Amino acid sequence: MSGIPIVGSPVKSKIILIGQAPGIKEGEIRKPFAWTAGKNLFKWFSSIGINEINFRNNIYMSAVCRCYPGKNLNGSGDRVPSETEIKKCSNWLNFEINYLKPELIIPVGKLAISQFIDFDILNDVVGKKIKYKNNIDIVALPHPSGLSTWYKKNPGKSLLEKALKVIKKSSAWQELLRK
Image (cartoon, rainbow, N blue to C red; front, side, top):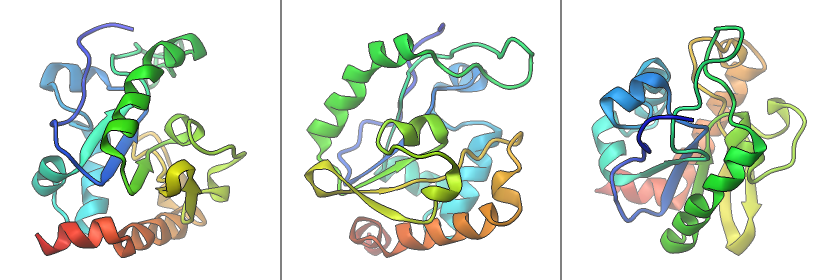
């Protein structure tokens, strides 16, 4: 892994969004979800009432790994961090969760989701509210990468819509909408 660690603004929030790791552009721009995947992600959140600026100012953004993992060996997309890399970074994420004591965690993509939920396929977890330790709600989202087609066709498309509705109904999200 290389580059500087990338995390969102240091906001005290009842909601944490957790991605896999920053991409190459996020390192240049120095903020998470700042490129193509971010454009898709913030369109999703705008559809349930919060634009990118309000999201970044009010929701804590983190990642399983904080530095760019490099390109896949086949050249398409970014490399998934190794178990060793994930373990080395886990103290940071665990600290953030313990410090912020969120009501809602939104893991984005398979790697982030797998840190909280044991599952086989996205269909098993996207669109559902799952209880995590200390009564934290988990609502998983697919990765908004331009390379992914899962969320563009059914059942992924309808499960994504369902997940966004679950997020919108959460008390933490409703509190943000009232600000």
